Image 1 (tube, chains in turn brown, red):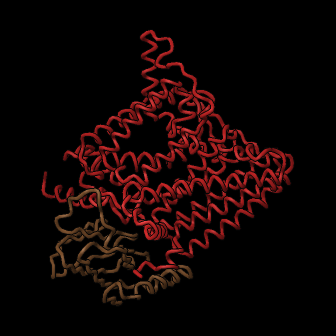
Image 2 (image 1 turned 120 degrees about the vertical axis):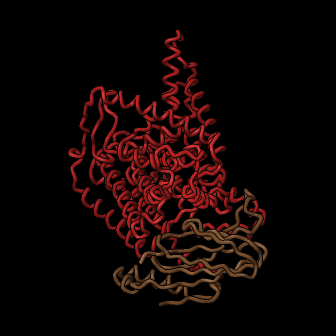
Length: 137
Length: 485
Protein backbone atom coordinates (compact mmCIF):
# COMPACT_ATOMS: atom_id res chain seq x y z
CA UNK A 1 0.00 0.00 0.00
CA UNK A 2 1.36 3.37 -0.97
CA UNK A 3 0.19 6.37 0.93
CA UNK A 4 0.66 9.75 -0.50
CA UNK A 5 -0.28 12.29 2.09
CA UNK A 6 0.36 15.95 2.52
CA UNK A 7 -0.26 18.88 0.29
CA UNK A 8 0.22 17.96 -3.29
CA UNK A 9 2.01 21.22 -3.84
CA UNK A 10 4.85 20.17 -1.59
CA UNK A 11 5.30 16.60 -2.60
CA UNK A 12 7.65 15.36 -5.25
CA UNK A 13 6.39 11.86 -4.61
CA UNK A 14 3.90 12.02 -7.44
CA UNK A 15 6.42 13.07 -10.00
CA UNK A 16 8.70 10.30 -8.84
CA UNK A 17 5.91 7.76 -9.31
CA UNK A 18 5.23 9.19 -12.73
CA UNK A 19 8.89 9.08 -13.66
CA UNK A 20 9.20 5.49 -12.54
CA UNK A 21 6.05 4.55 -14.42
CA UNK A 22 7.45 6.19 -17.52
CA UNK A 23 10.76 4.45 -17.16
CA UNK A 24 9.09 1.15 -16.44
CA UNK A 25 6.82 1.36 -19.47
CA UNK A 26 9.74 2.32 -21.64
CA UNK A 27 11.83 -0.59 -20.40
CA UNK A 28 9.25 -3.27 -20.03
CA UNK A 29 5.51 -3.17 -19.66
CA UNK A 30 5.58 -6.56 -17.89
CA UNK A 31 7.76 -5.13 -15.18
CA UNK A 32 5.41 -2.20 -14.74
CA UNK A 33 2.36 -4.39 -14.35
CA UNK A 34 4.14 -6.64 -11.89
CA UNK A 35 5.10 -3.68 -9.73
CA UNK A 36 1.59 -2.27 -9.68
CA UNK A 37 -0.30 -5.51 -9.25
CA UNK A 38 -2.10 -4.50 -6.08
CA UNK A 39 -4.44 -1.51 -6.19
CA UNK A 40 -3.36 1.13 -3.75
CA UNK A 41 -5.03 4.07 -2.09
CA UNK A 42 -3.80 7.45 -3.23
CA UNK A 43 -4.70 10.33 -0.99
CA UNK A 44 -4.53 13.94 -2.16
CA UNK A 45 -5.36 17.10 -0.32
CA UNK A 46 -6.44 20.10 -2.30
CA UNK A 47 -7.10 23.48 -0.83
CA UNK A 48 -8.90 26.23 -2.65
CA UNK A 49 -7.33 29.67 -2.34
CA UNK A 50 -9.65 32.34 -1.13
CA UNK A 51 -9.69 34.61 -4.15
CA UNK A 52 -9.70 32.62 -7.38
CA UNK A 53 -9.10 29.01 -8.18
CA UNK A 54 -5.54 27.81 -8.52
CA UNK A 55 -3.59 29.81 -11.07
CA UNK A 56 -1.63 26.75 -12.09
CA UNK A 57 -3.10 23.37 -12.78
CA UNK A 58 -1.91 20.67 -10.44
CA UNK A 59 -1.55 17.16 -11.76
CA UNK A 60 -2.50 14.24 -9.56
CA UNK A 61 -1.09 11.03 -10.97
CA UNK A 62 -2.54 7.64 -10.16
CA UNK A 63 -2.68 4.25 -11.81
CA UNK A 64 -5.74 2.54 -13.20
CA UNK A 65 -7.85 0.81 -10.53
CA UNK A 66 -6.23 2.76 -7.70
CA UNK A 67 -8.57 3.89 -4.96
CA UNK A 68 -8.41 7.67 -4.97
CA UNK A 69 -9.23 9.81 -1.97
CA UNK A 70 -9.52 13.56 -2.48
CA UNK A 71 -9.80 15.89 0.49
CA UNK A 72 -10.87 19.38 -0.46
CA UNK A 73 -10.74 22.26 1.95
CA UNK A 74 -11.89 25.73 1.10
CA UNK A 75 -12.31 28.98 2.90
CA UNK A 76 -15.22 29.90 0.67
CA UNK A 77 -18.33 27.91 -0.20
CA UNK A 78 -18.45 26.25 -3.57
CA UNK A 79 -18.70 23.00 -5.46
CA UNK A 80 -16.14 20.57 -6.68
CA UNK A 81 -16.94 18.92 -10.01
CA UNK A 82 -15.20 15.95 -11.48
CA UNK A 83 -17.26 15.69 -14.64
CA UNK A 84 -15.69 12.75 -16.41
CA UNK A 85 -16.33 10.45 -13.46
CA UNK A 86 -19.69 12.11 -12.74
CA UNK A 87 -18.69 13.10 -9.21
CA UNK A 88 -19.46 16.36 -7.52
CA UNK A 89 -19.59 17.62 -3.95
CA UNK A 90 -20.53 20.78 -2.10
CA UNK A 91 -17.83 22.33 0.03
CA UNK A 92 -18.58 24.56 2.99
CA UNK A 93 -15.90 26.74 4.61
CA UNK A 94 -13.93 24.92 7.26
CA UNK A 95 -15.48 21.52 6.58
CA UNK A 96 -13.29 19.40 4.31
CA UNK A 97 -15.14 17.50 1.60
CA UNK A 98 -14.02 13.99 0.80
CA UNK A 99 -14.32 12.22 -2.53
CA UNK A 100 -13.62 8.52 -2.77
CA UNK A 101 -13.63 6.68 -6.05
CA UNK A 102 -11.87 4.04 -8.05
CA UNK A 103 -9.81 5.21 -11.03
CA UNK A 104 -11.61 2.94 -13.48
CA UNK A 105 -10.91 4.83 -16.72
CA UNK A 106 -7.50 5.92 -17.95
CA UNK A 107 -6.91 9.41 -19.23
CA UNK A 108 -6.38 12.97 -18.16
CA UNK A 109 -9.41 14.50 -16.46
CA UNK A 110 -10.15 17.94 -15.11
CA UNK A 111 -11.28 18.59 -11.55
CA UNK A 112 -13.16 21.88 -11.50
CA UNK A 113 -13.92 24.30 -8.74
CA UNK A 114 -17.04 26.44 -8.90
CA UNK A 115 -17.36 29.16 -6.26
CA UNK A 116 -20.85 29.38 -4.80
CA UNK A 117 -23.18 31.78 -6.59
CA UNK A 118 -20.88 31.92 -9.57
CA UNK A 119 -22.02 28.73 -11.27
CA UNK A 120 -24.38 30.32 -13.74
CA UNK A 121 -21.98 32.98 -14.87
CA UNK A 122 -21.22 32.13 -18.44
CA UNK A 123 -18.40 33.34 -20.55
CA UNK A 124 -15.79 32.70 -17.94
CA UNK A 125 -14.50 29.46 -16.61
CA UNK A 126 -11.54 29.25 -14.29
CA UNK A 127 -8.72 26.87 -15.07
CA UNK A 128 -9.19 23.47 -13.44
CA UNK A 129 -8.38 23.16 -9.77
CA UNK A 130 -6.38 20.09 -10.60
CA UNK A 131 -5.97 17.48 -13.29
CA UNK A 132 -6.18 13.81 -12.51
CA UNK A 133 -4.02 11.60 -14.66
CA UNK A 134 -4.96 7.96 -14.57
CA UNK A 135 -2.22 5.95 -16.21
CA UNK A 136 -2.54 2.36 -17.38
CA UNK A 137 -0.69 -0.27 -15.40
CA UNK B 1 -40.03 11.84 -16.44
CA UNK B 2 -39.17 9.02 -14.10
CA UNK B 3 -36.73 9.75 -11.27
CA UNK B 4 -34.20 7.39 -12.75
CA UNK B 5 -34.32 9.06 -16.09
CA UNK B 6 -34.11 12.39 -14.37
CA UNK B 7 -31.01 11.26 -12.50
CA UNK B 8 -29.52 10.11 -15.73
CA UNK B 9 -30.27 13.43 -17.36
CA UNK B 10 -28.82 15.29 -14.41
CA UNK B 11 -25.70 13.19 -14.68
CA UNK B 12 -25.45 13.92 -18.36
CA UNK B 13 -25.94 17.54 -17.54
CA UNK B 14 -22.90 17.50 -15.27
CA UNK B 15 -20.90 15.79 -17.94
CA UNK B 16 -21.98 18.58 -20.20
CA UNK B 17 -21.72 21.60 -17.97
CA UNK B 18 -18.01 22.08 -17.97
CA UNK B 19 -17.88 21.54 -21.68
CA UNK B 20 -20.61 24.05 -22.34
CA UNK B 21 -18.71 26.85 -20.71
CA UNK B 22 -16.08 28.61 -22.73
CA UNK B 23 -12.67 27.89 -21.31
CA UNK B 24 -9.79 30.29 -21.47
CA UNK B 25 -7.39 27.56 -22.43
CA UNK B 26 -8.09 26.39 -25.96
CA UNK B 27 -9.58 23.05 -26.68
CA UNK B 28 -11.09 21.05 -29.48
CA UNK B 29 -14.80 21.66 -30.03
CA UNK B 30 -16.04 19.56 -27.16
CA UNK B 31 -13.78 20.99 -24.49
CA UNK B 32 -12.23 18.36 -22.36
CA UNK B 33 -10.36 15.56 -24.04
CA UNK B 34 -9.20 12.67 -21.95
CA UNK B 35 -6.08 11.69 -23.87
CA UNK B 36 -2.91 11.05 -21.93
CA UNK B 37 0.32 12.11 -23.55
CA UNK B 38 2.12 9.29 -25.25
CA UNK B 39 5.01 8.03 -23.07
CA UNK B 40 8.47 8.80 -24.26
CA UNK B 41 9.32 5.15 -24.94
CA UNK B 42 6.53 4.87 -27.51
CA UNK B 43 7.62 8.14 -29.06
CA UNK B 44 11.21 7.00 -29.49
CA UNK B 45 10.15 3.65 -30.94
CA UNK B 46 7.75 5.40 -33.35
CA UNK B 47 10.33 7.92 -34.51
CA UNK B 48 13.00 5.25 -34.95
CA UNK B 49 10.57 3.07 -36.92
CA UNK B 50 9.66 5.99 -39.17
CA UNK B 51 13.28 6.67 -40.03
CA UNK B 52 14.25 3.02 -40.44
CA UNK B 53 11.23 2.08 -42.56
CA UNK B 54 11.78 5.11 -44.79
CA UNK B 55 15.17 3.70 -45.70
CA UNK B 56 13.65 0.26 -46.29
CA UNK B 57 11.03 1.70 -48.63
CA UNK B 58 13.65 3.73 -50.46
CA UNK B 59 16.00 0.76 -50.82
CA UNK B 60 13.26 -1.55 -52.09
CA UNK B 61 11.97 0.90 -54.65
CA UNK B 62 15.36 1.79 -56.03
CA UNK B 63 15.24 -1.55 -57.84
CA UNK B 64 11.62 -1.48 -58.92
CA UNK B 65 10.79 -1.20 -62.60
CA UNK B 66 8.65 1.82 -63.32
CA UNK B 67 6.64 0.08 -66.02
CA UNK B 68 5.18 -2.40 -63.59
CA UNK B 69 3.98 0.23 -61.18
CA UNK B 70 1.12 1.57 -63.22
CA UNK B 71 -1.89 -0.08 -61.65
CA UNK B 72 -5.25 0.74 -63.11
CA UNK B 73 -8.29 0.13 -60.97
CA UNK B 74 -10.95 -2.46 -61.50
CA UNK B 75 -14.24 -0.98 -62.72
CA UNK B 76 -17.29 -2.60 -61.16
CA UNK B 77 -20.72 -1.79 -62.49
CA UNK B 78 -23.47 -1.84 -59.88
CA UNK B 79 -26.36 -1.13 -62.23
CA UNK B 80 -29.21 0.99 -60.86
CA UNK B 81 -28.10 0.41 -57.23
CA UNK B 82 -25.78 3.41 -57.18
CA UNK B 83 -28.20 6.08 -58.48
CA UNK B 84 -30.87 4.78 -56.09
CA UNK B 85 -28.42 4.84 -53.17
CA UNK B 86 -27.48 8.36 -54.12
CA UNK B 87 -31.09 9.55 -53.87
CA UNK B 88 -31.48 7.84 -50.49
CA UNK B 89 -28.26 9.52 -49.28
CA UNK B 90 -29.40 12.92 -50.51
CA UNK B 91 -32.84 12.71 -48.87
CA UNK B 92 -31.32 11.47 -45.62
CA UNK B 93 -28.66 14.15 -45.67
CA UNK B 94 -31.04 17.04 -46.35
CA UNK B 95 -33.31 15.72 -43.56
CA UNK B 96 -30.33 15.64 -41.18
CA UNK B 97 -29.34 19.18 -42.17
CA UNK B 98 -32.86 20.35 -41.31
CA UNK B 99 -32.81 18.40 -38.03
CA UNK B 100 -29.47 19.97 -37.06
CA UNK B 101 -30.70 23.48 -37.79
CA UNK B 102 -34.03 22.97 -36.00
CA UNK B 103 -32.34 21.34 -32.99
CA UNK B 104 -29.77 24.11 -32.84
CA UNK B 105 -32.27 26.94 -33.08
CA UNK B 106 -35.08 25.54 -30.97
CA UNK B 107 -33.57 22.75 -28.88
CA UNK B 108 -31.89 22.82 -25.50
CA UNK B 109 -28.97 25.18 -25.04
CA UNK B 110 -26.87 22.47 -23.45
CA UNK B 111 -24.43 21.39 -26.18
CA UNK B 112 -24.18 17.75 -25.14
CA UNK B 113 -27.92 17.28 -25.05
CA UNK B 114 -28.45 18.95 -28.41
CA UNK B 115 -28.13 17.17 -31.71
CA UNK B 116 -26.50 20.07 -33.56
CA UNK B 117 -23.05 20.30 -31.90
CA UNK B 118 -22.66 16.58 -31.30
CA UNK B 119 -23.63 15.73 -34.86
CA UNK B 120 -21.66 18.50 -36.58
CA UNK B 121 -18.41 18.38 -34.64
CA UNK B 122 -18.14 14.72 -33.76
CA UNK B 123 -20.22 12.55 -36.08
CA UNK B 124 -19.92 14.60 -39.25
CA UNK B 125 -16.57 16.37 -39.15
CA UNK B 126 -14.51 13.67 -37.39
CA UNK B 127 -16.58 10.58 -38.11
CA UNK B 128 -17.21 11.25 -41.79
CA UNK B 129 -13.52 11.97 -42.40
CA UNK B 130 -12.68 8.47 -41.17
CA UNK B 131 -15.52 6.95 -43.16
CA UNK B 132 -14.54 8.73 -46.37
CA UNK B 133 -10.94 7.52 -46.00
CA UNK B 134 -12.32 3.96 -45.99
CA UNK B 135 -15.27 4.14 -48.36
CA UNK B 136 -14.23 6.78 -50.87
CA UNK B 137 -15.76 10.20 -51.27
CA UNK B 138 -19.34 9.48 -50.23
CA UNK B 139 -19.68 13.18 -49.37
CA UNK B 140 -20.33 13.94 -53.02
CA UNK B 141 -23.49 11.83 -52.66
CA UNK B 142 -24.30 13.08 -49.16
CA UNK B 143 -23.63 16.81 -49.69
CA UNK B 144 -27.01 18.30 -48.71
CA UNK B 145 -26.33 21.67 -50.32
CA UNK B 146 -25.45 20.08 -53.61
CA UNK B 147 -28.65 18.02 -53.36
CA UNK B 148 -30.78 21.07 -52.61
CA UNK B 149 -29.21 22.94 -55.52
CA UNK B 150 -29.69 20.02 -57.91
CA UNK B 151 -33.34 19.63 -56.89
CA UNK B 152 -33.93 23.37 -57.22
CA UNK B 153 -32.13 23.40 -60.53
CA UNK B 154 -34.25 20.55 -61.91
CA UNK B 155 -37.43 22.24 -60.68
CA UNK B 156 -36.43 25.54 -62.28
CA UNK B 157 -35.74 23.79 -65.59
CA UNK B 158 -39.14 22.15 -65.48
CA UNK B 159 -40.69 25.54 -64.74
CA UNK B 160 -39.28 26.80 -68.01
CA UNK B 161 -35.96 28.46 -67.08
CA UNK B 162 -33.48 27.21 -69.64
CA UNK B 163 -30.45 27.62 -67.39
CA UNK B 164 -32.18 26.42 -64.25
CA UNK B 165 -30.92 28.26 -61.17
CA UNK B 166 -27.58 29.09 -62.76
CA UNK B 167 -27.11 32.84 -63.07
CA UNK B 168 -24.30 32.45 -65.59
CA UNK B 169 -21.32 34.15 -63.97
CA UNK B 170 -17.84 32.90 -64.75
CA UNK B 171 -15.85 31.87 -61.72
CA UNK B 172 -12.86 34.27 -61.54
CA UNK B 173 -9.94 32.10 -62.64
CA UNK B 174 -7.41 34.21 -60.75
CA UNK B 175 -9.00 33.21 -57.42
CA UNK B 176 -8.50 29.51 -58.08
CA UNK B 177 -8.98 27.34 -55.01
CA UNK B 178 -7.77 30.05 -52.61
CA UNK B 179 -11.30 30.64 -51.23
CA UNK B 180 -11.32 27.00 -50.09
CA UNK B 181 -7.92 27.39 -48.41
CA UNK B 182 -9.14 30.47 -46.57
CA UNK B 183 -12.41 28.77 -45.61
CA UNK B 184 -10.61 25.69 -44.27
CA UNK B 185 -8.46 27.90 -42.05
CA UNK B 186 -11.56 29.78 -40.95
CA UNK B 187 -13.41 26.53 -40.28
CA UNK B 188 -10.58 25.17 -38.14
CA UNK B 189 -10.37 28.50 -36.34
CA UNK B 190 -14.06 28.18 -35.47
CA UNK B 191 -13.68 24.53 -34.51
CA UNK B 192 -10.69 24.95 -32.27
CA UNK B 193 -10.44 28.57 -31.15
CA UNK B 194 -13.95 29.97 -31.16
CA UNK B 195 -15.33 29.14 -27.72
CA UNK B 196 -18.97 29.35 -28.80
CA UNK B 197 -18.66 26.84 -31.62
CA UNK B 198 -20.49 24.24 -29.53
CA UNK B 199 -23.34 26.56 -28.59
CA UNK B 200 -26.32 25.06 -30.45
CA UNK B 201 -27.86 28.38 -31.42
CA UNK B 202 -24.64 29.88 -32.76
CA UNK B 203 -23.73 26.68 -34.53
CA UNK B 204 -27.14 26.48 -36.23
CA UNK B 205 -26.79 30.11 -37.28
CA UNK B 206 -23.40 29.36 -38.78
CA UNK B 207 -24.83 26.33 -40.61
CA UNK B 208 -27.60 28.52 -42.01
CA UNK B 209 -25.06 31.17 -43.00
CA UNK B 210 -22.92 28.64 -44.80
CA UNK B 211 -26.00 27.19 -46.51
CA UNK B 212 -26.86 30.64 -47.87
CA UNK B 213 -23.28 31.29 -49.02
CA UNK B 214 -22.82 27.95 -50.70
CA UNK B 215 -26.23 27.93 -52.41
CA UNK B 216 -25.65 31.46 -53.66
CA UNK B 217 -22.18 30.47 -54.85
CA UNK B 218 -23.57 27.52 -56.78
CA UNK B 219 -26.22 29.74 -58.35
CA UNK B 220 -23.65 32.33 -59.42
CA UNK B 221 -20.86 30.11 -60.70
CA UNK B 222 -22.54 26.76 -61.23
CA UNK B 223 -22.41 23.77 -58.95
CA UNK B 224 -19.25 22.22 -60.40
CA UNK B 225 -17.13 25.39 -60.45
CA UNK B 226 -18.18 26.27 -56.90
CA UNK B 227 -17.40 22.83 -55.52
CA UNK B 228 -14.07 22.71 -57.33
CA UNK B 229 -12.81 26.06 -56.04
CA UNK B 230 -14.62 27.41 -53.02
CA UNK B 231 -16.56 24.58 -51.39
CA UNK B 232 -14.10 23.67 -48.67
CA UNK B 233 -15.96 20.50 -47.63
CA UNK B 234 -16.18 19.11 -51.17
CA UNK B 235 -12.46 19.61 -51.65
CA UNK B 236 -11.60 18.26 -48.20
CA UNK B 237 -13.59 15.04 -48.46
CA UNK B 238 -12.57 14.62 -52.10
CA UNK B 239 -8.87 14.74 -51.15
CA UNK B 240 -9.38 12.25 -48.32
CA UNK B 241 -11.59 10.05 -50.50
CA UNK B 242 -8.80 9.71 -53.05
CA UNK B 243 -6.97 7.62 -50.48
CA UNK B 244 -9.72 5.00 -50.29
CA UNK B 245 -9.72 1.72 -52.15
CA UNK B 246 -13.04 2.71 -53.72
CA UNK B 247 -13.38 5.52 -56.21
CA UNK B 248 -15.97 6.96 -58.54
CA UNK B 249 -16.31 5.02 -61.78
CA UNK B 250 -16.38 6.39 -65.32
CA UNK B 251 -20.17 6.71 -65.15
CA UNK B 252 -22.77 7.17 -62.43
CA UNK B 253 -23.51 3.45 -62.21
CA UNK B 254 -20.04 2.10 -61.52
CA UNK B 255 -17.25 2.28 -59.00
CA UNK B 256 -13.51 1.65 -59.26
CA UNK B 257 -11.69 -0.70 -56.92
CA UNK B 258 -8.02 0.19 -56.56
CA UNK B 259 -5.06 -0.07 -54.24
CA UNK B 260 -5.48 2.24 -51.22
CA UNK B 261 -3.66 5.46 -51.95
CA UNK B 262 -3.33 4.91 -55.68
CA UNK B 263 -6.04 7.50 -56.27
CA UNK B 264 -3.68 10.08 -54.82
CA UNK B 265 -1.04 9.64 -57.50
CA UNK B 266 -3.42 9.25 -60.46
CA UNK B 267 -3.11 12.92 -61.39
CA UNK B 268 -1.33 15.89 -59.79
CA UNK B 269 -3.26 18.82 -58.36
CA UNK B 270 -3.83 21.55 -60.90
CA UNK B 271 -2.96 24.69 -59.00
CA UNK B 272 -0.70 26.00 -56.28
CA UNK B 273 -3.80 26.84 -54.24
CA UNK B 274 -4.57 23.13 -54.06
CA UNK B 275 -1.04 22.51 -52.77
CA UNK B 276 -1.78 25.03 -50.05
CA UNK B 277 -5.10 23.29 -49.38
CA UNK B 278 -3.46 19.89 -48.81
CA UNK B 279 -0.86 21.48 -46.54
CA UNK B 280 -3.69 23.17 -44.62
CA UNK B 281 -5.34 19.78 -44.07
CA UNK B 282 -2.10 18.54 -42.57
CA UNK B 283 -1.24 21.60 -40.51
CA UNK B 284 -4.65 22.16 -38.98
CA UNK B 285 -4.94 18.71 -37.39
CA UNK B 286 -1.47 19.09 -35.97
CA UNK B 287 -2.38 22.52 -34.70
CA UNK B 288 -5.38 21.12 -32.85
CA UNK B 289 -3.14 18.52 -31.23
CA UNK B 290 -0.65 21.20 -30.31
CA UNK B 291 -3.27 23.27 -28.53
CA UNK B 292 -4.14 20.42 -26.22
CA UNK B 293 -0.58 20.19 -24.97
CA UNK B 294 0.77 21.69 -21.80
CA UNK B 295 3.63 23.11 -23.85
CA UNK B 296 1.40 25.68 -25.49
CA UNK B 297 -0.17 26.56 -22.16
CA UNK B 298 3.35 27.38 -21.01
CA UNK B 299 3.88 29.47 -24.15
CA UNK B 300 0.67 31.32 -23.40
CA UNK B 301 1.77 31.93 -19.86
CA UNK B 302 5.09 33.30 -21.09
CA UNK B 303 3.34 35.51 -23.64
CA UNK B 304 1.04 36.89 -20.98
CA UNK B 305 4.15 37.67 -18.94
CA UNK B 306 5.34 39.90 -21.79
CA UNK B 307 2.01 41.36 -22.74
CA UNK B 308 -0.50 41.25 -19.90
CA UNK B 309 -3.31 42.37 -22.23
CA UNK B 310 -3.22 38.93 -23.85
CA UNK B 311 -4.77 37.44 -20.72
CA UNK B 312 -8.11 39.05 -21.50
CA UNK B 313 -8.64 38.03 -25.10
CA UNK B 314 -9.42 34.37 -24.32
CA UNK B 315 -6.46 33.23 -26.35
CA UNK B 316 -7.77 34.59 -29.65
CA UNK B 317 -4.62 36.46 -30.59
CA UNK B 318 -2.13 33.81 -29.61
CA UNK B 319 -4.33 31.04 -30.98
CA UNK B 320 -4.78 32.74 -34.34
CA UNK B 321 -1.09 33.60 -34.51
CA UNK B 322 -0.05 30.02 -33.80
CA UNK B 323 -2.56 28.64 -36.32
CA UNK B 324 -1.07 30.86 -39.03
CA UNK B 325 2.44 30.11 -37.84
CA UNK B 326 1.95 26.33 -38.01
CA UNK B 327 0.28 26.61 -41.43
CA UNK B 328 2.95 28.87 -42.93
CA UNK B 329 5.80 26.78 -41.53
CA UNK B 330 4.33 23.62 -43.03
CA UNK B 331 3.79 25.37 -46.35
CA UNK B 332 7.30 26.84 -46.24
CA UNK B 333 8.86 23.49 -45.39
CA UNK B 334 7.03 21.79 -48.25
CA UNK B 335 8.03 24.46 -50.75
CA UNK B 336 11.61 24.24 -49.56
CA UNK B 337 11.62 20.52 -50.22
CA UNK B 338 10.17 21.17 -53.69
CA UNK B 339 12.95 23.67 -54.43
CA UNK B 340 15.51 21.16 -53.22
CA UNK B 341 14.05 18.52 -55.55
CA UNK B 342 14.13 20.95 -58.48
CA UNK B 343 17.79 21.67 -57.74
CA UNK B 344 18.74 18.00 -57.38
CA UNK B 345 16.94 16.91 -60.55
CA UNK B 346 16.58 19.92 -62.87
CA UNK B 347 13.88 18.12 -64.80
CA UNK B 348 10.99 20.42 -63.95
CA UNK B 349 10.52 23.68 -62.00
CA UNK B 350 9.84 23.73 -58.26
CA UNK B 351 6.22 24.74 -58.75
CA UNK B 352 5.54 21.67 -60.86
CA UNK B 353 7.29 19.49 -58.27
CA UNK B 354 5.11 20.97 -55.51
CA UNK B 355 1.93 20.23 -57.45
CA UNK B 356 3.11 16.76 -58.44
CA UNK B 357 3.76 15.49 -54.91
CA UNK B 358 1.17 17.46 -52.91
CA UNK B 359 -1.43 14.70 -52.68
CA UNK B 360 1.10 12.15 -51.44
CA UNK B 361 0.85 14.00 -48.10
CA UNK B 362 -2.82 13.06 -47.68
CA UNK B 363 -2.09 9.70 -45.93
CA UNK B 364 -0.14 11.65 -43.31
CA UNK B 365 -3.13 13.95 -42.83
CA UNK B 366 -5.41 10.93 -42.41
CA UNK B 367 -2.94 9.37 -39.97
CA UNK B 368 -2.87 12.59 -37.91
CA UNK B 369 -6.65 12.48 -37.86
CA UNK B 370 -6.71 8.89 -36.60
CA UNK B 371 -4.00 9.55 -34.03
CA UNK B 372 -5.62 12.69 -32.66
CA UNK B 373 -9.32 11.98 -32.94
CA UNK B 374 -10.01 8.26 -32.86
CA UNK B 375 -10.40 7.99 -29.09
CA UNK B 376 -12.24 11.28 -29.02
CA UNK B 377 -14.67 9.97 -31.63
CA UNK B 378 -15.22 6.71 -29.77
CA UNK B 379 -15.63 8.32 -26.33
CA UNK B 380 -17.48 11.55 -27.12
CA UNK B 381 -19.23 10.07 -30.15
CA UNK B 382 -21.26 7.96 -27.74
CA UNK B 383 -23.23 11.12 -26.98
CA UNK B 384 -25.11 10.58 -30.22
CA UNK B 385 -26.68 7.39 -28.81
CA UNK B 386 -28.95 9.11 -26.26
CA UNK B 387 -29.40 12.02 -28.67
CA UNK B 388 -31.06 10.02 -31.43
CA UNK B 389 -33.86 9.38 -28.93
CA UNK B 390 -34.14 13.02 -27.94
CA UNK B 391 -32.62 15.21 -30.66
CA UNK B 392 -34.14 18.44 -29.40
CA UNK B 393 -33.54 17.87 -25.69
CA UNK B 394 -37.27 17.87 -24.97
CA UNK B 395 -37.35 14.78 -22.77
CA UNK B 396 -38.40 12.39 -25.54
CA UNK B 397 -37.29 8.79 -25.74
CA UNK B 398 -37.93 7.76 -29.34
CA UNK B 399 -35.71 4.67 -29.44
CA UNK B 400 -35.31 3.84 -25.76
CA UNK B 401 -31.67 4.93 -25.68
CA UNK B 402 -32.08 8.05 -23.56
CA UNK B 403 -30.59 6.44 -20.47
CA UNK B 404 -27.37 5.59 -22.19
CA UNK B 405 -24.38 7.25 -20.59
CA UNK B 406 -21.01 7.41 -22.37
CA UNK B 407 -18.47 4.90 -21.12
CA UNK B 408 -15.30 6.94 -20.79
CA UNK B 409 -13.20 3.85 -20.21
CA UNK B 410 -14.08 2.20 -23.52
CA UNK B 411 -10.58 2.67 -24.97
CA UNK B 412 -7.63 2.32 -22.64
CA UNK B 413 -4.82 4.84 -22.76
CA UNK B 414 -2.42 2.12 -23.80
CA UNK B 415 -4.60 1.19 -26.79
CA UNK B 416 -4.76 4.87 -27.74
CA UNK B 417 -0.99 5.17 -27.58
CA UNK B 418 -0.47 2.11 -29.74
CA UNK B 419 -3.04 3.33 -32.25
CA UNK B 420 -1.50 6.79 -32.40
CA UNK B 421 2.04 5.55 -32.99
CA UNK B 422 1.02 2.84 -35.44
CA UNK B 423 -1.24 5.12 -37.49
CA UNK B 424 1.35 7.88 -37.73
CA UNK B 425 4.15 5.53 -38.71
CA UNK B 426 1.95 3.65 -41.21
CA UNK B 427 0.57 6.87 -42.72
CA UNK B 428 4.09 8.15 -43.06
CA UNK B 429 5.26 4.95 -44.78
CA UNK B 430 2.31 5.00 -47.19
CA UNK B 431 3.12 8.61 -48.09
CA UNK B 432 6.77 7.81 -48.75
CA UNK B 433 5.83 4.76 -50.77
CA UNK B 434 3.39 6.79 -52.88
CA UNK B 435 5.95 9.53 -53.44
CA UNK B 436 8.47 6.92 -54.62
CA UNK B 437 5.97 5.31 -56.95
CA UNK B 438 5.08 8.69 -58.37
CA UNK B 439 8.71 9.68 -58.80
CA UNK B 440 9.49 6.43 -60.61
CA UNK B 441 6.65 7.11 -63.00
CA UNK B 442 7.41 10.78 -63.60
CA UNK B 443 11.20 10.85 -63.79
CA UNK B 444 13.30 9.30 -66.50
CA UNK B 445 15.52 6.92 -64.55
CA UNK B 446 15.16 5.17 -61.18
CA UNK B 447 18.26 7.05 -60.03
CA UNK B 448 16.65 10.41 -60.75
CA UNK B 449 13.47 9.25 -59.09
CA UNK B 450 15.30 8.39 -55.89
CA UNK B 451 17.14 11.72 -55.93
CA UNK B 452 13.87 13.55 -56.56
CA UNK B 453 12.14 11.96 -53.59
CA UNK B 454 14.96 12.42 -51.09
CA UNK B 455 13.95 15.95 -49.97
CA UNK B 456 10.31 14.94 -49.61
CA UNK B 457 11.27 11.82 -47.64
CA UNK B 458 13.35 13.95 -45.28
CA UNK B 459 10.42 16.34 -44.88
CA UNK B 460 8.02 13.49 -44.15
CA UNK B 461 10.33 12.13 -41.45
CA UNK B 462 10.38 15.61 -39.92
CA UNK B 463 6.56 15.86 -40.07
CA UNK B 464 6.25 12.45 -38.44
CA UNK B 465 8.63 13.31 -35.63
CA UNK B 466 6.86 16.64 -35.02
CA UNK B 467 3.52 14.88 -34.92
CA UNK B 468 4.86 12.30 -32.46
CA UNK B 469 6.37 15.12 -30.39
CA UNK B 470 3.01 16.83 -30.14
CA UNK B 471 1.40 13.68 -28.83
CA UNK B 472 4.20 12.73 -26.48
CA UNK B 473 4.69 16.19 -24.96
CA UNK B 474 8.24 15.29 -23.92
CA UNK B 475 9.04 18.95 -23.29
CA UNK B 476 6.55 19.05 -20.50
CA UNK B 477 7.36 15.65 -19.09
CA UNK B 478 11.02 16.48 -18.86
CA UNK B 479 10.80 20.17 -18.13
CA UNK B 480 8.07 20.51 -15.57
CA UNK B 481 6.57 17.24 -14.43
CA UNK B 482 3.19 18.83 -14.04
CA UNK B 483 3.45 19.70 -10.38
CA UNK B 484 3.51 23.40 -9.58
CA UNK B 485 6.79 25.20 -9.46
